[in-house]
Amino acid sequence: MVTDVGMGRDEALNGSLDPDPGTGDGGSGLRDRALARAKAAFYGPIAAYAAAHAVVMALFAWSLAHQHGRFLFALSSWDADWYTKIAKHGYENHLHYSHSGRIEQMRIAFFPLLPMLERGISTTTGLDPHNAGIVISLVASLVAAVGIHAVLKDRLGNRAALVAVALWAAAPPSIYESSAYSEPLFTAVTVWALWALLRRRWLTAAGLTVAAGLCRSSAVTLIGLVCLLALVEAVRSRGRDWRAVVAVVLAPMGFIGYMVYLGIHTGHYDAWFKAEKAPYWESSFDFGKSTWDALRGLAGFDGVHNADFLATVLVGGVVVTSIVALYFVIRDRRLPWELVAWTVLTVLFSLLTGGGFSSKARFLLPCFILWAPFASWFAKSRTSSMVLGVVVIALVGGWFGAYFLGPANHMSP
Image (cartoon, rainbow, N blue to C red; front, side, top):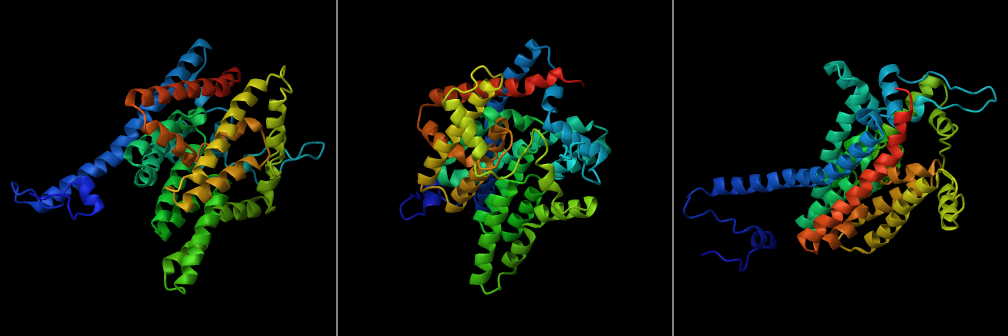
């Protein structure tokens, strides 16, 4: 009989790699085990995601029904509607200003990958772009779930990685994972770019980073990390690793390409930066002043009679929790420094950039690593306690979504 004495760690965990003497077919046994592991890595995170997110969507749907709301309309409202307008009409070919000379809101503020996909699906299937965006987000969220599990399972273990997927699916801003917003798509390509980067698969990481750069401005943190590591490898190998050299050049092309396109299209190479300063958006790097002002006002209960107070409380809770989680992420030596560095940079990018405070929770959604410490703690508890904890968070997520997307039903269709 074969024992685990003298076997490697993987063999001891997964069983002997020797063929079963009773079968006489070692190759078939290996293939069967590999297939079983592949299925577990695929179906496990999808099941964890679907179970947790179903609770979010059930409470969201129940709340909308009591408000006489429209389910699909709510999921394709606010920023999602801007993406649909781009899919239908494209971008403006010049900057728009008000009579007072102030820049107006324009479609060019939104990156092109999601509306391009919406237009493609709408053209080929006849599906309305609003609904196409929802489909894209649902598929992207499942792809992201599998990627989150793939990135974390070797660091935290399979159970904790599945819990991390469930927590990401249940998080307060998780309603946007089923909405026609760009966060699910951005998370999917970013997670798999990080997965490739950890394995130094330079071309895969760079290609996915191009997609991220066509999706959201926060891709600059991923672009910087991929370019830096690829450059270090290119220098270390004295240019012999051509894939690393190509990655340095390729990775920023999505973001840069969109900026160049807008420059040619509108005649202003800073068109996107100008559009971000439009009324109500007013998004520019302010070293965290707007975030600090919101949190400081919340701590002092300023604006307690303001209609936005509850929104500030909810988002403030997500922000503070994320900062606490970031502390534990930095301390967790099991996590590769690349993941920690990307998470720190992305959280800082989200919190140090101005704009509406109510969007901060959504901007933090792609930072899946923030759930790693909580997942590790939950995974050590009994299954019943773990499930109860995820369900409670999911209920908060459903209520959070109803609060922020429910008011869309008061708009005109």
